[in-house]
Image 1 (cartoon, rainbow, N blue to C red):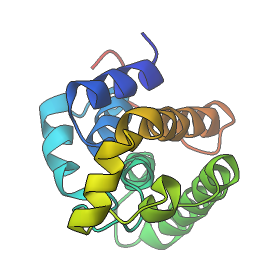
Image 2: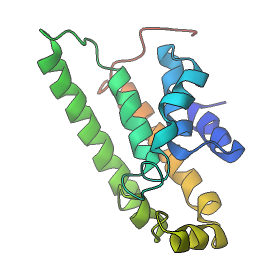
Image 3: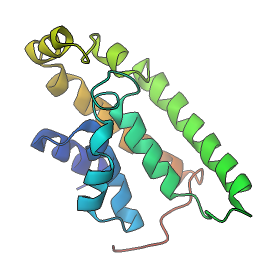
Image 4: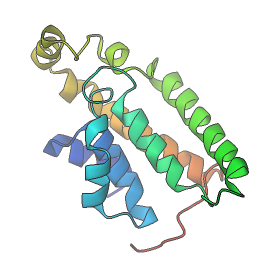
Length: 158
């Protein structure tokens, strides 16, 4: 099963978009799925269902941070810039594929309001639109890794 399929399956099980994306992408870096699911728990629905930045985007950005080679304060400036550039590249690609980075724009309603969440549920947006966003986020990160934009995981088989 591909990482995109793992992420989509987790989303279908009921995990949030951010949890699904981050936990699938974090596995190859040796991050336990249960830990990844906890770390990403508050980012779903555009960050705590605030309809802001899509949870697929935040989940992917957390995974991109895992590719940072050093967190040493002495080396961090260079690594931070590489990470920021990779994050910007991811965001450009996600926006190119989907038209926005914002949950409210991707869904066409504001799920931070009772009316908006009711509309999303009535129109089954979480089942019809969100799975594509989950897959896209994982695939873009994998494409970036394959292209050498992101460092591959140092941990294998974890």
